[in-house]
Image (cartoon, rainbow, N blue to C red; front, side, top):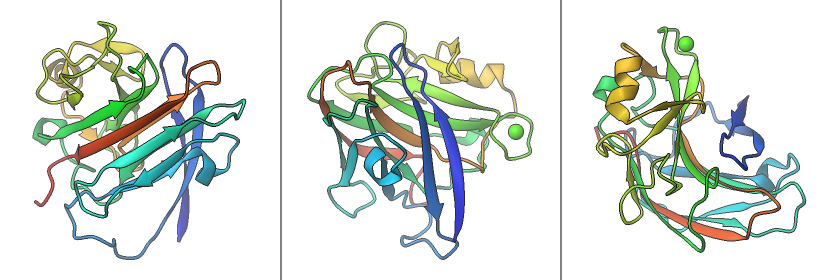
Length: 216
Ligand SMILES: [Ca+2]
């Protein structure tokens, strides 16, 4: 067992800084490679001062997760999902075909509330140079998707923030700006819901999460 510490910066207008630690087993994954079984992480489990809970609703590769951000913790809440065993890691961005999910929520996502995050390696050493931040806020500046379906690769209106700062109009623009870039292998791709204390409680359900192409 080795412990990996990731510091994840969230970049919305109301965003909080997250630090989450995840023990990663050195043993064999519990699912077949390529099935992209989603795993939970959340503030309560990480025990770093935040609240928020993630619950998996089934064990299948396409199961849903409930992200409950409704505590009274003055630091706020976060919860999300990631995958340990996707063939996404190390893949050229030009070879990635599926980065998508469906969400429902008890509120409409505001900037910083719900995002898909992809660690990008631009210089071929496997290490993350920046995160591609894909926020579901429907404010005309982000990637709300259509009817709750966020499809990062195929939605030409999906604005992606490089390093959380530099907007790229869509996936093609991100690739054009970063020729030869890959998904990094030192950090996780993940979806996270976040809530600062001044924001209303929210319960999100994410399903049909695709972290790369499953079942390769
Ligand atoms: Ca790198």
